[in-house]
Length: 210
Image 1 (cartoon, rainbow, N blue to C red):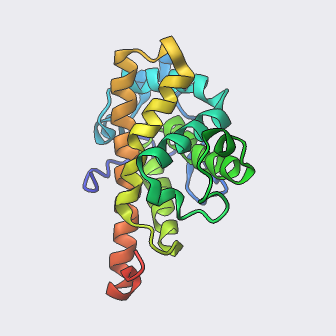
Image 2 (image 1 turned 30 degrees about the horizontal axis):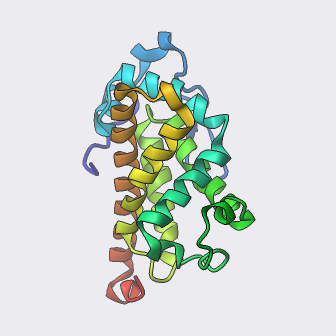
């Protein structure tokens, strides 16, 4: 995946700077009429077609309306399948009840932060360079967390898909499940690779706590 750094077909494209420091195109393709303008390299690098990218961004609007609920659902399911990950959070590591977790403010805040990153990536899924930079930086930022391993990113795949299914209901068709699966696999793998590369750059001693 890392070798597919196709450049946008827009040398004169204007960019704005979001708070995370990544370059965001001022005009992203959001309408179906813009599908033909999407950079082929970007879509191929992610693994979805032009039309699939459009469908994903349209479907994601339903998630954006319930970002907080979807994020909390995702983490509640994550902690069921990967209890050691819950143990890493001091604020809610000992909470066993799903209802208590859903009402925990610290989990709500963390879930919102994570969903904001996923929102940024999926909203710009047709811009490979931007999403790659965003996710790589996010992966690097996790090197500061003791005992967090790069592989932990991958554990969120199924909880994410299940949370999306719950939020979208009947709109979560087999086709959309396939598209979301491809997208989240790319996102999580890129996060993992970003953290791995950072740990390699820091040397063996940097990985002693992960």
